[in-house]
Amino acid sequence: MDITNISAINQLSEVSRYGSTTYTGNKTDSEESFDGLLASALNLVGETNQLSNQAEAEEIRYAMGESDSLHDLQVAQKKANVSLQYTVAVKNTALEAYRTLMNMQF
Image (cartoon, rainbow, N blue to C red):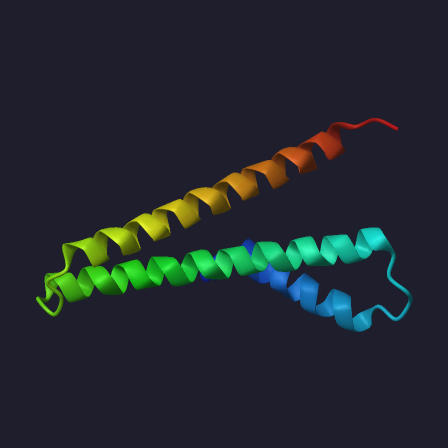
């Protein structure tokens, strides 16, 4: 399972790449904090993907008899699960903030 194939994530990485190379003026604090937030979110997705892939690899090793350690399998699965739950919570919070901003009337 490869969660980096989600089209929105690919679009975010495109925006991040183009945004940092085409902007020639001085960045304000809010722009720098948004860039940092976007980079952090992309790193979080990448880390979640890596842990998910490691858990899947450990499952395959255990199923094929290459590993006798049920403990390692459970630890890998738990890490992947916690990371995915955290990523979903961050996504939900970002969407809620976006919806709040969109509902504001000026």
